[in-house]
Length: 137
View 1 (cartoon, rainbow, N blue to C red):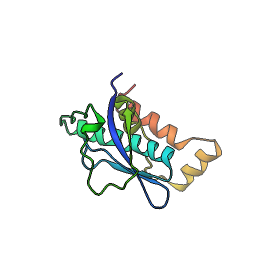
View 2 (cartoon, rainbow, N blue to C red):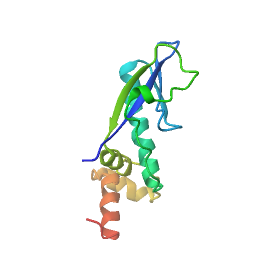
View 3 (cartoon, helix red, strand yellow):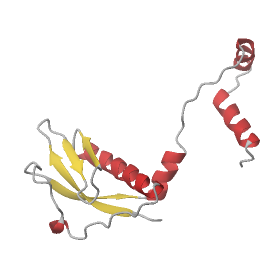
View 4 (spheres, rainbow, N blue to C red):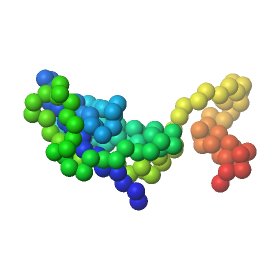
């Protein structure tokens, strides 16, 4: 399974949280109320950012190999922490592409009432019908 690891800069915030940015990936940033949450949010931000790059068929930037060679932004607060963040692109892609989305449908009220009386799961029924109609397994 492919995995990508990039260095992240965890910058302490005045309220006790941490801002996070990736020097090798401009525009990829996040925040968490504490270090643990900031790490989770950094993983999510990195996964989404790399997914976007790959979806655009662009080449992923090469990660810096040595943390001492990172280009730390000059306005970064003192006391920052550099840590590696790793993501698995196939898991991120699966999560994004198979997420549940809400959609509205319109049916006659009498049909809805009968279906509800019989315990019909509208979401499951619609998914099954769409897969059949689109010849998907």
